[in-house]
Length: 261
Image 1 (cartoon, one colour):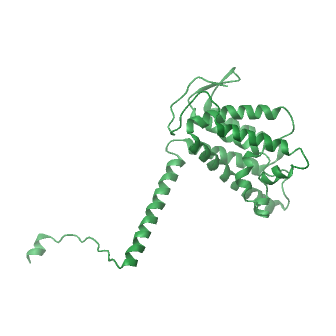
Image 2 (cartoon, helix red, strand yellow; image 1 turned 90 degrees about the vertical axis):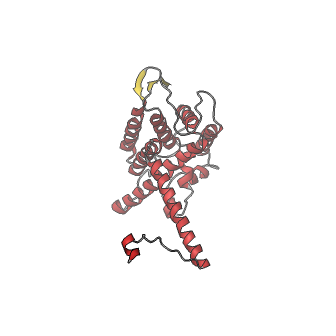
Image 3 (cartoon, one colour; image 1 turned 135 degrees about the horizontal axis):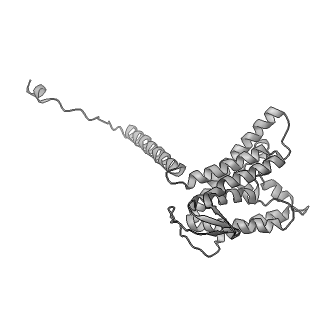
């Protein structure tokens, strides 16, 4: 993967072409460790408890909404190494572009709502069909969800760049977003995991909106300011009532003719 352009950073992070962020290495280490634990009888219960499942609403396992992107999934093959390698390449660039705070904010912004939507879809499908899905939310587990978010983030941040995929095929970076959806759809055709597919779509859409100037980040910031303003206004009103102050509204000045009469 090679980019022919490195646009400026509007998010306050520090772009660095080299270096391995500790946060990214820690994420990859956790993903690989949990991936390996699933193949041992004594430790398989740990990743099973951390993955996103219908137990969130059935048994109150609410922590899965936060932990599921960091629990590796898949069969024991060399593919896990390739997946983590490409995840590292995208995650490293996104981390240096956004900075630590916005990097983690992005993951929370994309992954948590996606989990809630997927859980809602799974619950709705159970109500309509009367039977649980064969592989509920399988497509959005672990490194697959992280890959969808971070690849979309990379594509959004470098939307005008040309990427040479595998150093051969030139492709515009922004096209990585629809390609991510296409790959997720191919996974849906195999697994019939509608909740997982829609979760991926939501995460990709929220990632694009979060990193687009004037998008949801601006709306959320304005909403936060309005909420703070309303809270301060209510607090001042309570203090006025508590201390017995009376607020006198400004009166419009009377016309000169009225003053003379």
